[in-house]
Length: 103
Image 1 (spheres, helix red, strand yellow):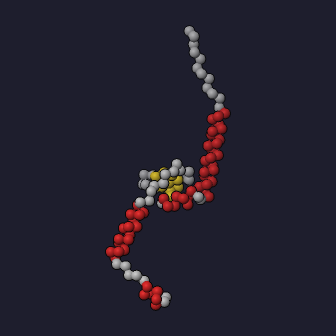
Image 2 (image 1 turned 90 degrees about the vertical axis):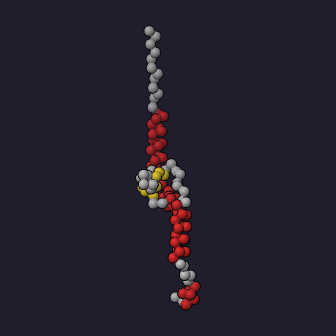
Image 3 (image 1 turned 60 degrees about the vertical axis):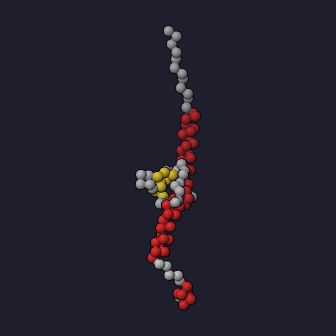
């Protein structure tokens, strides 16, 4: 290292470090919860993906998880399953109305 670089380092007091860390904590807590039909929070307030049944470590990683290959495959499988179930219900015959006795 050069002498200029050594001298240019700023000395930070312990109080300043504590203040910085407390500010950082409050910013982390201010992260909003994910609102998505695929996201749920469990009893321990952990973010989980409903389709993948996996725990997402933080809200910041949610977008990475959603864009992941495995998640996209699970979305496609869910869409196919939904289409199959919708086709199945539309092909069913309607129930005949109950017969009314005239007696």
